[in-house]
Image (cartoon, rainbow, N blue to C red; front, side):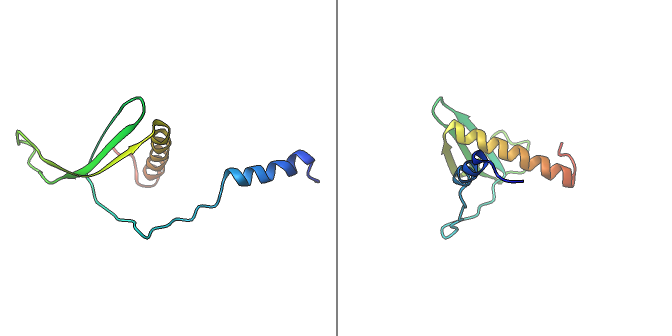
Length: 99
């Protein structure tokens, strides 16, 4: 089946919408966190990540060592939420539902 002019014109636009991504990991650092907190304003979403080393739940006070703060636009935060929802759906389909 031959391409119509509309199909030929659409292909370069599709390619421009999805550029090839090259990951530069030269300065990438990995951290383990077991605590996350998030809040927002109208203009930004702020997420804090850290480590809770207190395993005694009966303590009146727990200290969390915050290691990373990520600040992003609400649009980027929504894309991240969608990505995490998809990732957790795939995880649970492989390993079972998390309670």
